[in-house]
Figure 1 (tube, helix red, strand yellow):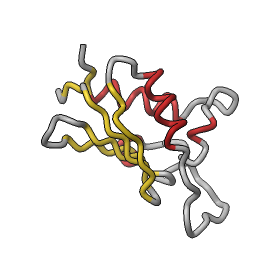
Figure 2: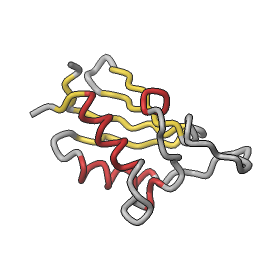
Figure 3: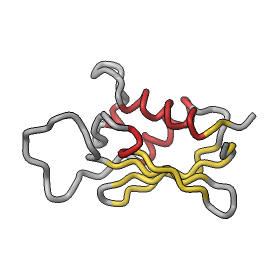
Length: 112
């Protein structure tokens, strides 16, 4: 069974915006999302792989403190493990840290 893009976005938002005691430590470098369409982008690749781009800082709740010039590195393996458990119906190919973004490559997604 293939998952839709909306299910994947909902699962990511649920993980990222989880309460402090329930949020996985691998997602500590990603800010909570107030506006998911701005913080998460989906790109369909030619080979059927879905690229999910999650912004580390994004458009979060009012943050009045300073931001570091270089964002901290994301725990790519930890993010991959959490997403593999949450989205068991699809295959998480890889998770990559690209500075201010985290790229997640997912196979087995229904684009509709």
